[in-house]
Image 1 (cartoon, helix red, strand yellow):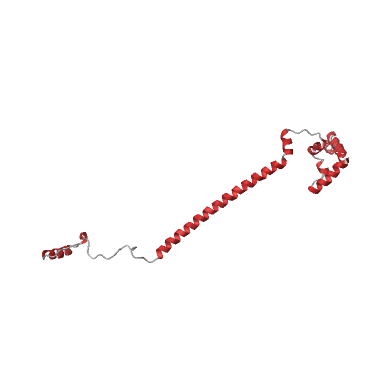
Image 2 (tube, rainbow, N blue to C red; image 1 turned 30 degrees about the horizontal axis):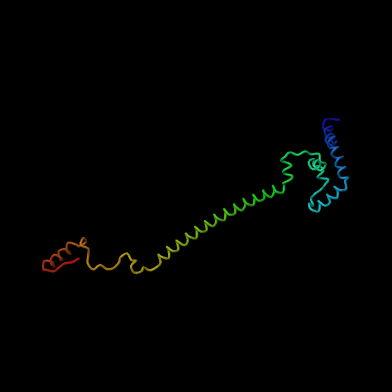
Length: 170
């Protein structure tokens, strides 16, 4: 027999531990109580397969009472539901925070956009409105000119009128 054939045969031949495990699994499966419990468990968890689970050394050892667990494993076995619930609650809280953050940022963007539109609309409306009394740049008609803007001809004319005795007022 060459090396490859020898290795192939060795892989197919169960080890002593595997033989003992198979033997103990058969002993456990012979117990009518376990079979009854497995049937009841299959109604709750349809995917449960006792023979498949017996291939798992942890499951088999726990069932036979041969496995010693460390503190973490014992705690997780006893409180697995609570731990899963806490993880789900944390995930939900994170999802809610993310959703609120997105909603708030969307609301802020919407509010800014609407405010900007209202301001621009108001500016446009004021630009199209006719000027009302008192809002014009020129606020009335001046009847006399400013002294600083009089031309030389205007000043000479006013000087002649004043020379004749007329009172000039600005």
